[in-house]
Length: 173
Length: 451
Image 1 (cartoon, rainbow over the protein chains, first blue to last red):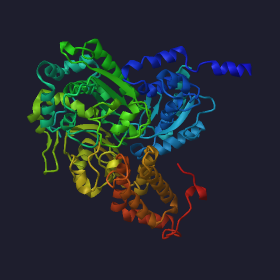
Image 2: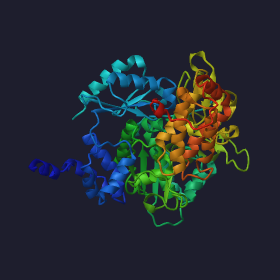
Image 3: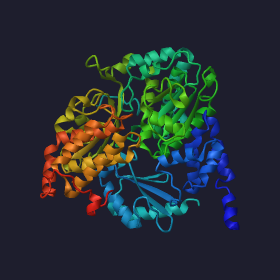
Image 4: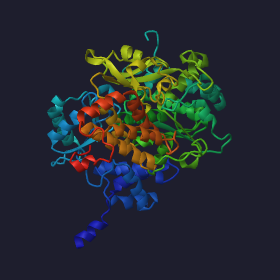
């Protein structure tokens, strides 16, 4: 009980995160406009936006938690539990699909042992399907963190998965 | 197009093309200096209007006219939003501009702000463009360091701040009022218009939303003049067509030998683009069909590839418009069923859910296409698809924004132009049930998972 009470009082947002969020306030005429930047900042740090972060973001932005939650849930992008250290989107839209994108996605899924939207057991990789990543000149493509994997093929999937794993190992906790 | 000298892509192949020094060495920011030194905002608007620049984001609205809709003598603030939520499938021209030549986009943005008296600009960059985001931020930082942003820019009375705003993977944020809602920190539900953003946009203030490629045209119009700009492209073809002037970035992807983003005068034909810039269809195959300007615009048959890719061309063969001028080529091995399934799945995923006809219609069409693809289709489904396509969107007047029209056009074009192929597929894969008229069970109920 005592532990639970103590945990519930420990803020989810570190002073560092709060500071980063507050730095965005002067950019906009309303505090609410910082909602999306705040969600991104939290997500960048924690690889998710835990439920506990929502009232704290709301407090900084002088909103009700429901307003923050409303915006958060609109974008399927933000999750409540941590994604893998690397989140990889394999494009399934038309230009990639024409060049084997769907096959790459299912091969990635088989190799990683997860379905799109899921994270590998070792917590290193979250696989996602993406809608057009705007890399149609190098289709099929995948975006993993800030890195773009171009001209993918089913044959390279084993290699790509090991690249993703080392990308995950390089990523800070 | 051997004679055409690139304008918008003139810098992109230079080493370090994204830096201020390289941009300035190529004559960059001379238009900004010219404007600040000797042109009034009205003169800039008039010049852009006279050049006939039309928005490159999809709708093709005349840019100078849009700027002119701002209320005169407004006390401010006025906001500029640059719509870099480039999410239309097969479209990546703005990614190239922002990654390889961010200063060109910034210079255009600055002049657009000067013309509209906007003092804050937000560049809404989609989440999927991390490199563009970084390059733009670097470019913005360079400008602040050189007093090309901030207060009293280059010694003038012009003040401007530019901020990047990162999206979160939602196609609807590319709709201008969806973008504004998202910028304000809300769900990106498009607004009912009027009021138009020019009157009441971001933070309830007058706002202009422009595409990056659109504003990238502006410095060239300032530097080289209206006559030069109007010497490129296709003149007006009638009273309802304001003409298609200037250079255009065309994306070519899918089954071509050289997918890429190419600059050409507005109005090259789809076939020229595929053959010349795209290097022809891959693997020695023949083209079967192509998407003219992002999947929202519908579908061209092989016979229709000689249409001009200008604002008026695609409409002459039943497409929605030029859209983003992103051509996706499909060779003879592609099934129309796979194409339409892919389109319907995209729109079902991206419908924002605000308007019932779109939310339900896009999902319904995806389920129908999934069932057809899985070998459980009926002829009747084709009529249902047509019925959906004719009842969702701003054209039938049932939705707030045009996403549903974009969802409708692939259905409409595919079913009307390739009905025989659909019927062959349905008859072949569902010989027992293709004539079924009664309701059929959803695939999930017969054990075929959705995707």
